[in-house]
Length: 206
Ligand SMILES: C[S@@+](CC[C@H](N)C(=O)[O-])C[C@H]1O[C@@H](n2cnc3c(N)ncnc32)[C@H](O)[C@@H]1O
Image 1: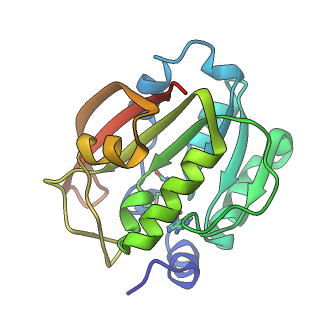
Image 2: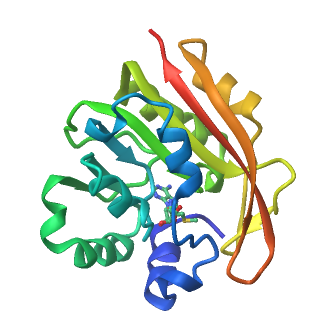
């Protein structure tokens, strides 16, 4: 089954936030990595596939500006209704992140992707994703990944995954990015099953 908008719209129409297989009440692992970036609270963050994540409120409330992308209009509608007045500093985008971004964007300081990239299994789609990362991010910016690790489950949401090592993330980003920090994290999903993730923060030097 392809990772398309209909699939994700169905998921978000049928499932409450806390029952989503990747739900977390706090984005504490992501926030721990953000803490390594001086002044990240003033940055403009691109969220590659936001879903219904509380990371949105957790970053907005600390002062960040957001570009919130998702392939699912249902996911975006859910977040929009949650944010109401607090959504004033948000740019909304509804697109497949493996395709070129056509909409003009503000300057992006930080790209965050938890559990989106690993749904891209076609090599052309993965290449398209990394072309977006490298065209959006300039020197001094950061990219934060949280993806299923090589030891992780092979599927999620009924879809086959491409699981990641830090080495592969690093190789795909290219030599203009350096690794700032990484750690393994075992997320326990709402069904109580362990889901090993790799977290990695990179900085663009050139
Ligand atoms: C597993 S959920 C993770 C959501 C969120 N990042 C989180 O941590 O809660 C995957 C999200 O990526 C979105 N998505 C899947 N494929 C995508 C694509 N090709 N482009 C943009 N978003 C995509 C889905 O709609 C969904 O919201």
